[in-house]
Length: 439
Image 1 (cartoon, rainbow, N blue to C red):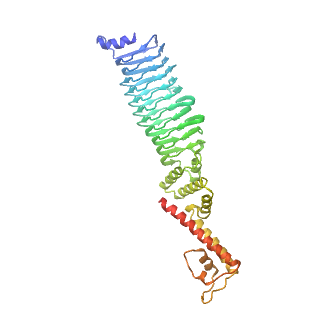
Image 2: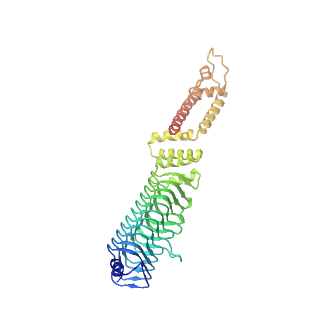
Image 3: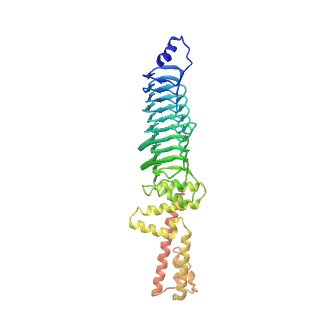
């Protein structure tokens, strides 16, 4: 009856139907508008459908279902000039919208779905799936798929509950969003979220959300693009988080809820909030299961430098060299230990001065009690401090080393100071070269 009313009125032109409004009805048989053009607003409230609704290829002005129950909806490639509204509905079968074009919004507030396939969906304004006014949330059991969809406004999942344990609960690969993607304020997922290659023009927000996929990937966001990425969730993410090769402006997180494992290879960001000391952020880097990743340390150090926090930047780069040391062979590892001990790989330059002062003091004390005999004809007055300094500095000549020649055990002490001086000089040059090459 509904199809003849909708189609016949506009074909015959004898009946004016600006809108169809049906309330508290049971719809028996097919609700079939396949490939049908309806130029009127269709609104059904408190209706029960015996069979799935078929809008395959239909052209509609506006389609609204409120507090209805039905065994499924097929709107594949449908075109709707206004909005598609499924508010507080119970759908016991699949809801499929692949390739549909909605000029207005898609509104699913408070509905209960058994999976949603909206692959390639085009939405002019917002995609909304929030709680209804009394707080009952939108929920979806099974996979909610919006991959390759294009939403001109925002994607709003505040308070939504998605469940597909051990599998993908929200598939948003290659999703394009013109504004915000809000998965916050009680948003809860049991299963994996996949935002790989998504492009969100504003921020992706998981504030006060609960993300969990025990033993698997809770959030995959490889190659994600967003101005902000907000992840101070209510509890530590139960599962792995993959941010490899994502590009975001600002990452906002909370140390208390960092995931146990976090992949960051190729991750690019401009700022991190809150501003934590380098020692705490190094724990963040250490959560990558891939182990030592040079780029991750370089990225974090660059972020500190942009903030003018040079001490923190040097701390990160020193940690990078120490982690790298564990990946090389015995001889390079030994050389690394030596550079670390003497000058902190160039990032702790005062250590060189400290070592020089210790060696100078030791040499001066020794040669003050064991003065070497003078060379004939030199005529210099022996100075234990200057003599020790002459031995330690390879390229500086104060005349003391050539004027006095120790013998026996004192000669070996002198050789030791000369070797220590050269070793200290070489490590300083290597460290300075590394530091300058980074500038």
